Image 1 (cartoon, rainbow, N blue to C red):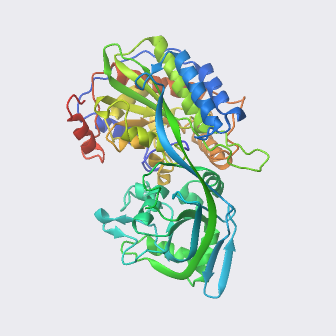
Image 2 (image 1 turned 135 degrees about the horizontal axis):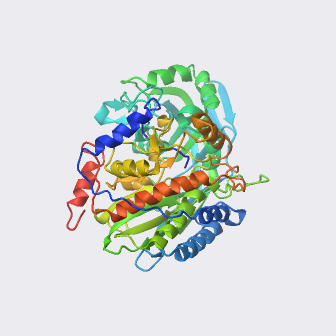
Image 3 (image 1 turned 45 degrees about the vertical axis):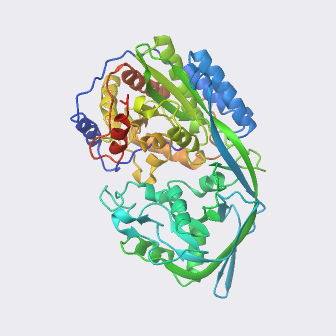
Length: 561
């Protein structure tokens, strides 16, 4: 996961961000206790990050020897920090997965009139199958341009209107129709991406439409990452939740093509990608059969296995059956560049730092003594494959959500140095903002909105698996306004990380990293967790929020909230 997650506009000022958090305080008076922050064990997080991102751990891909080493290390560190096993005496929660690895890829061949175009795997396109089948074959499947691939009845928007996709392959644009807006105004929240803009949704909807294939056109700005990220993320082993039908209800193939490839294909059909993209932004857009076909094939190696979430607890002294959650994903991409001199995506920042933060925070809380409520430290698996570990926990919580107060997610901590601010998730969404506002004031910092809400980061880390089930969750990240260099230096750090390290072999541990900013952020995480654990409050989503009804239903259960 990449840093900085916030569904807000870049034009929103710091004052507006803080005002949105203050607005939620009007919902109800909450018990927000003052807490003392002890010395944060920076050496612990530094060493844990170094170990977890070493070549010995092989990129921490679920289902590999790297997972076994990661799990053993986390149990050892959780135990040394003072935690207890959290799942009925076990440190683990089994997460049943299936892994499908494509190989022997034929070129992607497109027939358009008298033209035959072939595109090379990895350089021009990538593709996978969600189906558990020994071979994937797409043969002469008709291409249909379906705009952004959205079917949203509540918005009166259907990019598949009037077309039967059976046997056909959808060509889909990344993000939402209004991602270029300057504000949050628009049918799909303007500049801020909705779930309709995520690749996960686009593949899901193509399958619901009965399509044989779904191909997303990669474009760096609306995707928020370059082709290297796509290539590394979508090649090699892919893990999915185990399904009774073996994925038979999914498309035959899901893939991506470079923008230049899509332009060539559309030019050959007498269309223009730019013109069709402009038309797709308008309500009432109708799908466009391209008069071209696509073919490819590849073999699949399939294996079923059980990965694991790691669950540690610091039992509460007064109300041990009330829980405060801390989450981070331990996994990364493994050997993402086979055959290269350096083939391991070590995932030092993403997310050895967040996992190591669980260890450091557990140590700090344990040394301070048990709080009133139980603190849960949950290291989840398979985030990089689509939030699979957190999704499994969300569907099968070890600690019932009606007895879980809320939580904080940590993903890819900033090594940019100390900052005057933090980046927050959706200010004004829940009463957890009250706790955040108090914690920021105590730390002498402010909240700042993410500069790239169009990237849809809100849907790209593990808090979403909990939030959509009603559990209030915060995602607080490192700031943009650095103490040394201000916002210009903060942006330079972000750009450098995204271009050279994100989901790439360049995400490696650096002995010269400045950990003072991480220490600053850990103080905030500690304060938030301790406040929630010492409070008697049950924060809720704000009235009218998309998750409020689910939380209300959860709290209405016997013994809930």
